[in-house]
Amino acid sequence: MHLNYLDDYIRRQNEVTRVMDEKKNRRSLRMVLVLGAAVAGTALVGFGGLAAWQAYTQNAGNNFAVGTLSHTNQVGLGTVCASTISASAPGACSVIVSGAALTSDFAGTSGTVTITNTGSLSSTFAMSMPAAPTGGALCADLALTVTDGEGTPATVYSQTDLTQTMGPTALDNSNGVATWAHGDHDTFTFAIAPYNNFANDDSVLGSTCGFTILFTQASA
Image (cartoon, rainbow, N blue to C red):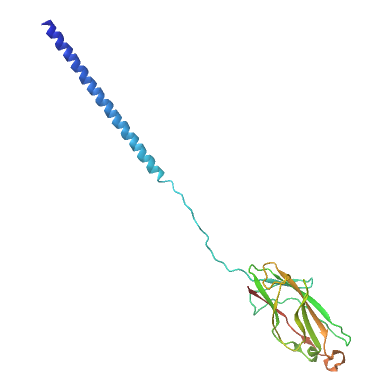
């Protein structure tokens, strides 16, 4: 009897131990599952956060603008005269040459004009006398010659009496190039000299002669 009782006691203890072990194992498994779910949730949050990191490139300021046409006109070492945009209303710059009360021994006079491209556009320049000289008989007894005074002197406008208009004559810069970049310049000499029968022409007494020179700039 006692032996059977001892065996029963041992079996009950073993069963209690088995049940407790099973409960412990189930608790451990639940803990592992909970921790695994927490880690997985953290990973999901982490990857979701990375989606908020964004990079950008931007190509802004795709603009267009028209360059400028402008130049300066300086007679001798005098005041610098700035150009205007409208050719129909050009800037009124200084007188290039003048002579009052000429006598029969008048030998001529001259003056210079320096043109400088101050605009951003490459340009071409031309000189003209758009209107015929005005005045009396004196115009026929005076002649105008225009030469390029920088580099190798070149005749821009051959000696001609002041009785007619002068068509546009292309002008090179001081480097002898027809296209003027920003900052390019050149100096031109305007010479007025007696012509034909000036010294012996009594009809010129008391008469006058006046003319206008126009410089035209165009984009190249």
